[in-house]
Length: 440
Ligand code: CAA
Image 1: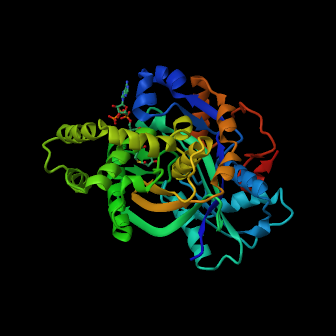
Image 2: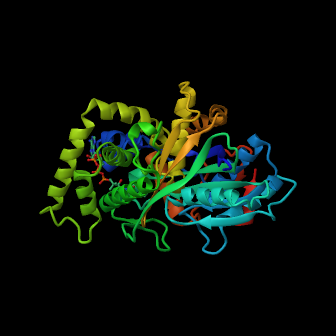
Image 3: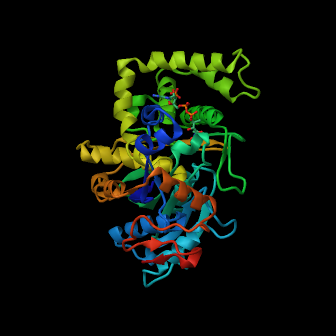
């Protein structure tokens, strides 16, 4: 069968940085370690005044096309995944194509464009669409541009405020890819849930604690469904397991669930997870506290073993390093986690070619999806070309008063004036809606 997968990845982070320990925690009256240790987050990225989901996506895509020496004629699809769209009719991919057409002689009139929505899992769904399009033989030698772009902001003083972030991940999907080949076997866990919603509102309505339980319940179902397709998995089958990462602390919990499931089947874990998924839930526990205690006791026992710690440090920890510096990017988050792991391997001379990744995506509302990928020979060079370290380093470190202005502008859909904190450098900038995104 044709090998299809990700041939190149480019990342664009919002150019502002909110330091959670130094800047955010003191204003919230919190111990900084709640963020750095508890949530596992050090900083969040925010968009500067001239950035939005269109410019961040277009800048990542443009860097990718330039690096690969591609022209519009090479691109047969542009798929955008976002949960921050501002237009209920025209897909964000058309705005991004409009930006790109300003810098290329050709146009993208021949390219199929769309926008996927299912919270954070939409990035993986777009990736799937692109892979299926090529596997179906409909691409006529062209590749697909998949762009996950979001401004993940929460209301001020809400529980999610510490987990914000903004950025875009562009992926180039082709036959005989340089980075990873996707397997066609997938597992799903999907249910109608209402713990995280954005019904025509700028900031999500979130039941944070319940959203964590729903994440774990759907993830467990998708792992079981994946195993129905592929047979039982063992943790050592995979070099890395990139999870959707709203914050690294969430992945710590998901990793325990996955590890436990893969090593021993599903006795107490299954009972606990089934309890979480049941409506009304917790029939076997006389209170929320009893339920939380049961989970904590179980997790403490497992995470105290050397075998678990070694596995976690090798297969999970390397997936979290970029997220811990930029926060939640919603649709781009699991793709940052994959990239983070590959970058770790490339920098440490770990030969991953032929090894497998287990990629665990999730979107609120709610659906989890699990599939495996095989790392390709060209991954080291492909990952080494990334500028993400420099981008993270060069962000402007905002004060709390500046953060309030940035947040307020986002809340009022950019009608509030805000002077930029940084200077654009040969990139697309926000200058009004759509076609007015200019490259300066
Ligand atoms: N030192 C060390 N650790 C500390 C600490 C300190 N001083 N203070 C607190 N902690 C720990 C806590 O024990 C806790 O860890 P455990 O969960 O392992 O016990 C952790 O820090 C967080 O503390 P809280 O639970 O008190 O934090 P919170 O209630 O203020 O916020 C949250 C947590 C509710 C998840 C919140 O971040 C939130 O609402 N986030 C948005 C929703 C979200 O991301 N949900 C995740 C699943 S949904 C999803 O994945 C989709 C998506 O992208 C949104």
